[in-house]
Length: 383
Ligand SMILES: [Zn+2]
Image (cartoon, rainbow, N blue to C red):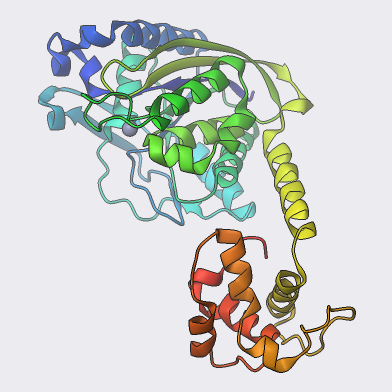
């Protein structure tokens, strides 16, 4: 068996009656949809749940997966200590997922746990699933500072582990949407907030997981989104699978966006390998960018790439450089990598000052190598 389906659910503590104390009725549509989604998960009769949460401990360069046999949690941080639950962890699924992640070159594992208690991003879905009668071992996974594609790849590794063990599994992607929907909301308003929610709920409704991977990072940042990386990992777990997508509800009345969606796997579909599609798009983007580079930027790139690939300096200039570039006095006063950096980043800076502080600035190509390997500001992505 593989992944049977997935749900996207939010995690406002308010929707638990002992926390909301009546206020939960403000988001009744979300609660109703949550129960519908939980019923669907129960109908799949899962033997394992994969639960991702943005409020689990998060590292910039590591995916933390909860260690141990079990964990407990409650709503005491939200005024309802009487509402609690415990869960068992699926240890064999975890071991297999970590093994496959490591084999895929992803930094993921059970190190670095600070607090074993269930965070509210994990607790809320489990609360509603328990209410619907779902009680099975979970794989509890945190997010990271890695790229969207790396979150997707970890989802693929988890799906492969599920398949290897022959489990009936459901992916539960916990995540709120924008926190910037209303002036009177807890985080205020930004125009990017409603725009983010419009795009992400459109992608949920259409099952367009490529959109999860290609959202504009600046838009996501200004929208103060919560759960996108959860959704990206879920998309990876459903890589190459056709799904029937249903957006059950969307509300933003509290100033935070809550979306509930269900994705039922209906069979294989090679056109839904969104990780591969995303990589192909990135290759095309970089090729176009490279093709548009001027000779200075080309030289900077060649110098840096030569050093990174071979560990050696670029000793000879390539043929056919425009007049003036081979003039040492003209080159020495302006580091090409720095020029490249400012062109790519759009920043205004002082190349002369940077060049003056670099120890090897006798030639433009050595200056670019120095900046690229010593100055963090010049470590640009398309190496
Ligand atoms: Zn959140």
